[in-house]
Image (tube, rainbow, N blue to C red; front, side, top):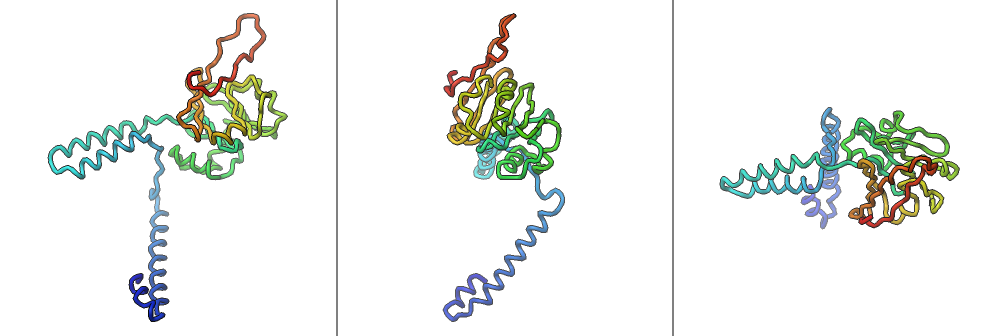
Length: 256
């Protein structure tokens, strides 16, 4: 119909071929919508690492391109990629670039959002990349977060994460939380928290992902994915020392 419409254009008769082509396109779209509504038509998988993906593609190309017995080696390459696929480490804390949305890794391994978190670009894509078929409403149900009008507090791997929504909660959260996240600029008002991510940092480097590894918290940003900030826990205070909040926020030099 597309070719016929081009042939009919010099005579001003392209209307009917174009209408027929549009009708057929609608049929294809309706068929796709119908098939996608079947149970099991869509499956969500955890995002795999780039190395695993490259190995699987190379293995497939090896099998397709070679004509000798050497093509069987491609199966070995693809199997290696499949073996490395689950090795991609998932972040324990995700922070949106505006600082208003954050997600924690629950004990079950799923991402959990603060109550009443609405669906959005970051929320939907975080869930898809995590291989999670739940929507924002289902992912924000539970008791991982404790919230009030001034913010939310959650715990992941024994470390306290505070999502501050109002400056009135900043003093308490900075004193008790390991990680403080704020959609406004904190500046020097929060010295006790080991990791502090505010609007200034988010505007400069985009969204953040935190990895909790034993006593350390590793932070990676979107703009500078190769830069790793390592936050080490200080030694325990000496007996009789009342200075409980001795954590100091390190700089962004990877050597630190």
